[in-house]
Image (cartoon, rainbow, N blue to C red; front, side, top):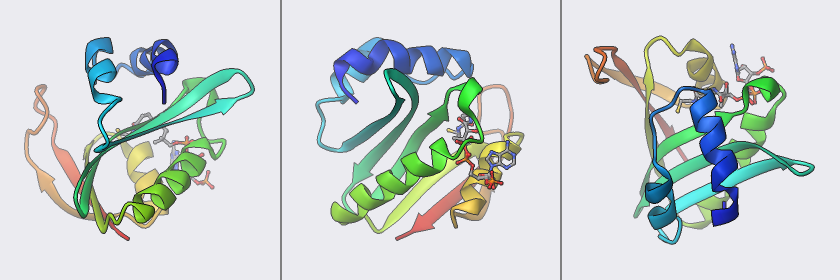
Length: 138
Ligand SMILES: CC(C)(COP(=O)(O)OP(=O)(O)OC[C@H]1O[C@@H](n2cnc3c(N)ncnc32)[C@H](O)[C@@H]1OP(=O)(O)O)[C@@H](O)C(=O)NCCC(=O)NCCS
């Protein structure tokens, strides 16, 4: 992900109704070596992105998102598989994430990729929804 990708990345973020990062946060975080930020392009079009924060041997998946019109085409899987390779190369051993309890598509995606649901955080989100906790062991 480079600075010129940010309008398209923010476009996907808005389309999905995520309240993740502002343009400013992206701009300041992209230069950090502790952030793995990947995008997937189909021809000229940016259709998905992945953000992972790396903290030594541990990492946190901040976001994985695919444009609505390209869901369920294997793009999220390709992006995760590439992320997995790069995180392995950086010596990451465990990756954690939270996902909304009502987001069954993402939960199926993570289970399909051998993530383990190891817990729940009650009323984690500001609207009161629970978070399911997943981890991936490399
Ligand atoms: C979750 C997400 C990244 C998956 O990306 P994707 O490109 O659509 O997923 P893939 O096509 O690679 O799917 C791989 C597998 O995940 C599972 N899966 C993906 N979407 C699913 C859905 N809507 N319902 C059930 N299972 C699903 C299936 O097992 C699928 O394999 P299959 O198609 O052979 O059955 C995508 O749906 C997305 O962007 N969601 C909105 C953002 C989000 O919720 N991100 C996660 C929280 S940060």
